[in-house]
Amino acid sequence: MQPQGKAIRSFSRIINLLRDLSSTDKLDVIPSKYPSFPTFASHIAKLFSDDRLFDIIPRLEIELGIIAKHNPPVRPAMDPYVSTQIGIFSKNYSDWEIGGFLGYPDCCMRPFADEARYGIDERHAAELKKVKGRIFVATAGFIPHSIFCSASQAGGLIAFVTKEELESIRQVERELTAALPHFHSEYQGQYYEVRVS
Ligand SMILES: [Zn+2]
Image (cartoon, rainbow, N blue to C red; front, side):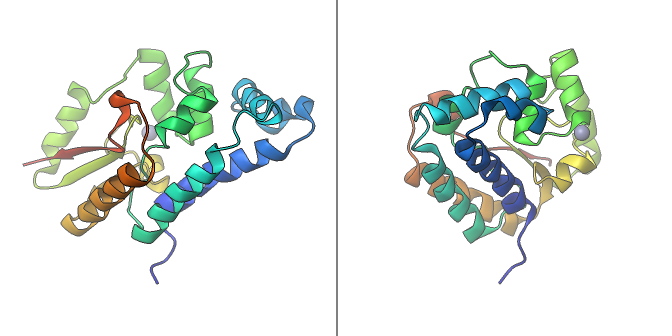
């Protein structure tokens, strides 16, 4: 048995949050309980109380089962069907709230929210030049402030991986595609990968 890895912990945190939001009967305490994403948490709890999210936790449990089986160093993106159902792509919530919900570190949220640093850019490219021969992987949709960000590494959001770890990541991706089909063509990839040669 491999020890429980960062990707498993990071993904379990999201499921536990959603389970908690699904079972609350006091919507007015949500903002103080989730100070880093009060509006978004209230929105999710309301959707649960209206029985509009009945199918999301079973899907995330399937995703967690696949992650736990392969124990990759980086967690995949959350099932895009679930992200859509809870409103992550809706732009109704601040980047800070969405980042807080997804467990993105503040050091990485700042350039994303304040400078609209939405992709791998020339600053990342300059850093990547220093790591020749390595493979960098990030959770799809997450942009680290630096490819060396220690908070993101600790959170299972980025890593430099070995060939074997890359194979476990590809296997997670294949199994997720087969087990959890969805209709968001722009969100098919669960990971972002850069091979530095
Ligand atoms: Zn960071």
